[in-house]
Image (tube, rainbow, N blue to C red):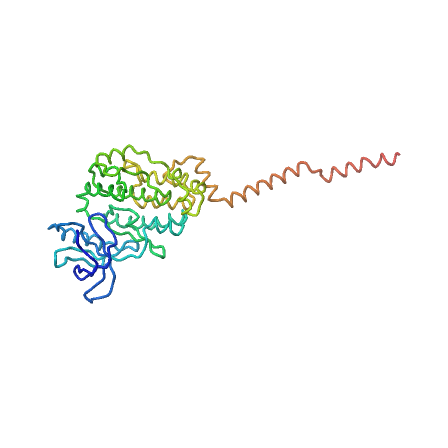
Length: 360
């Protein structure tokens, strides 16, 4: 869509400024202009030069999908309609916030706080998945964080947009370069596993400050599929740069140690090439992140006895230390008793010397 300018009217809304472009739409900051009420909204409009006859029905379906999602971490739908010029629109909640990664880096947020934000994302996504709604375009710009630290998911895509997913995948690679899950370039339908993979890419960047891999500009879909299937994703803990560590208020060595082990395993499981090898749901990924935060063994790692023992010791450091101290005290007491002379032996020695002294 071209030619729209600030100040123009779309239905009852006056455009203020362009907020962004993504998927098949532009999003504008707009205000209600008919006097019905005062509210700023994020107005989503189709980004096409020529209006298609099916746009109104597609936006109506998206309206019905998003209107059914009432969750504190999902941006609300206020209104939907078609302008006098035949332009369909969705009026969404305008969220004043920053993209997830930018919000964290600007505040030098640590790993625990980043994982807690990710748990908000997963809670919202699990809610949507339970209602058979996929997001299909999870990236930092579609996950905003408010000044108070509340996450809001934006811009759920519809099934109609999925029908043109091959063109959409190609477009995403050419511009923001967020890699799709490996099954999508070969034509498989998007499902919950595709969203899980996208969360793996997001979690990798949130923790390590980089993406698992980058794709070449202008690559064909076949080249993209081959690159994704051949790529060897490195553990996040091995990809830490000095500026990344500084944005997390850590040294490179400390951040690498923090990511090594459980978080490496969790991220790599979400990024498995085979959808069946990924986490089965957003809830399962959230559960593993919560286990990591609680110091419990994570499902992404093999339950080796030494690993389980180490986790137990870390979770019960005080108790283990007190038990060890008690064992040392008992052992020391027993040892002391074994080498300390008894009072009876002392009497015997004194009594044995008395006759000797008298005889002398």
